[in-house]
Length: 167
Image (tube, rainbow, N blue to C red; front, side, top):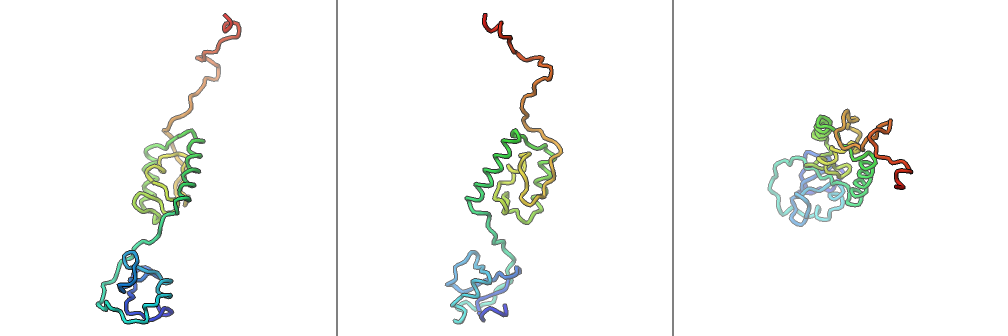
Protein backbone atom coordinates (compact mmCIF):
# COMPACT_ATOMS: atom_id res chain seq x y z
CA UNK A 1 0.00 0.00 0.00
CA UNK A 2 3.04 2.28 0.18
CA UNK A 3 2.83 3.35 -3.48
CA UNK A 4 -0.93 4.05 -3.31
CA UNK A 5 -2.28 7.47 -2.33
CA UNK A 6 -3.33 7.83 1.28
CA UNK A 7 -7.00 6.92 1.72
CA UNK A 8 -9.03 6.60 4.90
CA UNK A 9 -11.63 4.40 3.17
CA UNK A 10 -9.24 1.63 2.10
CA UNK A 11 -8.83 -1.55 4.18
CA UNK A 12 -6.38 -4.32 3.26
CA UNK A 13 -7.92 -7.79 2.80
CA UNK A 14 -6.31 -11.21 3.14
CA UNK A 15 -5.68 -11.36 -0.60
CA UNK A 16 -2.69 -9.51 -2.06
CA UNK A 17 -3.69 -6.45 -4.09
CA UNK A 18 -7.40 -6.53 -3.15
CA UNK A 19 -8.87 -3.88 -0.85
CA UNK A 20 -12.20 -3.14 0.79
CA UNK A 21 -13.37 0.37 -0.07
CA UNK A 22 -15.80 1.94 2.41
CA UNK A 23 -16.49 5.06 0.31
CA UNK A 24 -20.22 5.22 -0.59
CA UNK A 25 -19.50 6.56 -4.09
CA UNK A 26 -17.41 3.52 -5.04
CA UNK A 27 -19.63 0.85 -6.49
CA UNK A 28 -17.89 -2.49 -6.68
CA UNK A 29 -18.82 -6.12 -6.12
CA UNK A 30 -18.83 -6.63 -2.33
CA UNK A 31 -17.04 -3.22 -2.10
CA UNK A 32 -13.82 -4.95 -3.14
CA UNK A 33 -11.42 -3.17 -5.47
CA UNK A 34 -7.99 -4.01 -6.79
CA UNK A 35 -4.75 -2.03 -6.66
CA UNK A 36 -5.36 -0.40 -10.07
CA UNK A 37 -8.68 1.09 -8.93
CA UNK A 38 -7.11 2.48 -5.74
CA UNK A 39 -4.18 3.95 -7.68
CA UNK A 40 -6.49 5.96 -9.96
CA UNK A 41 -9.19 6.86 -7.40
CA UNK A 42 -9.97 10.59 -7.22
CA UNK A 43 -11.87 10.18 -3.95
CA UNK A 44 -8.78 9.30 -1.92
CA UNK A 45 -7.93 12.99 -1.37
CA UNK A 46 -11.24 13.62 0.42
CA UNK A 47 -11.88 12.41 3.96
CA UNK A 48 -13.82 9.18 4.22
CA UNK A 49 -17.48 9.84 5.05
CA UNK A 50 -17.72 6.36 6.57
CA UNK A 51 -14.73 6.32 8.98
CA UNK A 52 -15.89 3.54 11.30
CA UNK A 53 -13.41 0.66 11.60
CA UNK A 54 -14.17 -2.41 9.59
CA UNK A 55 -13.40 -5.98 10.54
CA UNK A 56 -10.80 -7.69 8.33
CA UNK A 57 -12.36 -9.14 5.22
CA UNK A 58 -11.74 -12.67 4.09
CA UNK A 59 -10.52 -13.17 0.56
CA UNK A 60 -13.18 -13.29 -2.15
CA UNK A 61 -12.52 -15.03 -5.45
CA UNK A 62 -12.92 -12.35 -8.13
CA UNK A 63 -11.77 -14.52 -11.02
CA UNK A 64 -14.24 -14.98 -13.84
CA UNK A 65 -14.78 -17.89 -16.22
CA UNK A 66 -13.73 -17.40 -19.84
CA UNK A 67 -16.03 -15.28 -22.02
CA UNK A 68 -18.97 -17.00 -23.69
CA UNK A 69 -17.34 -17.18 -27.13
CA UNK A 70 -14.31 -18.99 -25.64
CA UNK A 71 -16.57 -21.41 -23.76
CA UNK A 72 -18.55 -22.08 -26.95
CA UNK A 73 -15.34 -22.80 -28.87
CA UNK A 74 -14.07 -25.10 -26.09
CA UNK A 75 -17.39 -26.95 -26.14
CA UNK A 76 -17.28 -27.31 -29.93
CA UNK A 77 -13.75 -28.77 -29.85
CA UNK A 78 -14.63 -31.12 -26.98
CA UNK A 79 -17.80 -32.38 -28.68
CA UNK A 80 -15.92 -32.99 -31.93
CA UNK A 81 -13.36 -35.10 -30.04
CA UNK A 82 -16.18 -36.92 -28.21
CA UNK A 83 -17.96 -37.80 -31.48
CA UNK A 84 -14.66 -38.85 -33.10
CA UNK A 85 -14.07 -41.14 -30.13
CA UNK A 86 -17.40 -42.90 -30.76
CA UNK A 87 -19.31 -41.16 -27.92
CA UNK A 88 -17.55 -43.36 -25.37
CA UNK A 89 -17.78 -42.56 -21.69
CA UNK A 90 -15.50 -43.45 -18.81
CA UNK A 91 -16.26 -46.02 -16.13
CA UNK A 92 -17.64 -45.13 -12.72
CA UNK A 93 -14.20 -45.32 -11.07
CA UNK A 94 -12.62 -42.98 -13.60
CA UNK A 95 -15.58 -40.59 -13.38
CA UNK A 96 -15.31 -40.43 -9.58
CA UNK A 97 -11.53 -39.98 -9.80
CA UNK A 98 -11.87 -37.10 -12.26
CA UNK A 99 -14.43 -35.29 -10.11
CA UNK A 100 -12.28 -35.93 -7.03
CA UNK A 101 -9.37 -34.20 -8.73
CA UNK A 102 -11.66 -31.29 -9.63
CA UNK A 103 -12.91 -31.07 -6.03
CA UNK A 104 -9.40 -30.13 -4.90
CA UNK A 105 -8.62 -27.82 -7.83
CA UNK A 106 -8.42 -24.05 -7.24
CA UNK A 107 -9.86 -23.49 -10.74
CA UNK A 108 -13.22 -24.99 -9.72
CA UNK A 109 -16.16 -22.79 -8.81
CA UNK A 110 -19.40 -24.60 -7.96
CA UNK A 111 -19.65 -27.21 -10.72
CA UNK A 112 -17.76 -25.23 -13.38
CA UNK A 113 -14.13 -25.03 -14.42
CA UNK A 114 -12.83 -21.44 -14.42
CA UNK A 115 -10.09 -22.39 -16.89
CA UNK A 116 -12.27 -23.69 -19.75
CA UNK A 117 -15.78 -22.79 -18.54
CA UNK A 118 -17.12 -26.34 -18.84
CA UNK A 119 -19.77 -27.97 -16.66
CA UNK A 120 -17.69 -30.54 -14.77
CA UNK A 121 -20.37 -33.19 -14.16
CA UNK A 122 -20.72 -33.62 -17.93
CA UNK A 123 -17.12 -33.09 -18.92
CA UNK A 124 -15.85 -35.78 -16.54
CA UNK A 125 -18.06 -38.38 -18.29
CA UNK A 126 -16.60 -38.27 -21.79
CA UNK A 127 -13.59 -40.43 -22.49
CA UNK A 128 -12.24 -37.92 -25.04
CA UNK A 129 -12.68 -34.91 -22.76
CA UNK A 130 -9.52 -33.64 -21.09
CA UNK A 131 -8.73 -31.37 -18.16
CA UNK A 132 -7.33 -28.06 -19.46
CA UNK A 133 -4.64 -28.27 -16.75
CA UNK A 134 -3.76 -31.89 -17.69
CA UNK A 135 -4.65 -33.16 -14.20
CA UNK A 136 -6.84 -36.10 -15.26
CA UNK A 137 -5.12 -39.46 -15.86
CA UNK A 138 -5.87 -41.54 -18.92
CA UNK A 139 -9.09 -43.55 -18.43
CA UNK A 140 -8.56 -47.17 -17.36
CA UNK A 141 -11.91 -48.43 -18.56
CA UNK A 142 -14.62 -47.36 -20.91
CA UNK A 143 -18.21 -48.33 -20.53
CA UNK A 144 -19.67 -46.19 -23.25
CA UNK A 145 -21.31 -47.30 -26.48
CA UNK A 146 -19.07 -48.96 -29.03
CA UNK A 147 -19.58 -49.38 -32.75
CA UNK A 148 -20.98 -52.82 -33.69
CA UNK A 149 -18.29 -55.37 -34.29
CA UNK A 150 -18.26 -57.38 -37.50
CA UNK A 151 -16.96 -60.95 -37.33
CA UNK A 152 -13.64 -61.50 -39.09
CA UNK A 153 -14.89 -64.60 -40.96
CA UNK A 154 -18.06 -62.90 -42.22
CA UNK A 155 -20.33 -65.28 -40.27
CA UNK A 156 -23.65 -63.83 -39.36
CA UNK A 157 -23.66 -61.31 -42.16
CA UNK A 158 -26.64 -61.29 -44.46
CA UNK A 159 -24.79 -60.75 -47.73
CA UNK A 160 -26.42 -62.13 -50.84
CA UNK A 161 -24.60 -63.26 -53.88
CA UNK A 162 -25.35 -61.42 -57.14
CA UNK A 163 -27.26 -64.36 -58.64
CA UNK A 164 -29.64 -64.60 -55.65
CA UNK A 165 -30.43 -60.89 -55.89
CA UNK A 166 -31.61 -61.28 -59.50
CA UNK A 167 -34.40 -63.79 -58.78
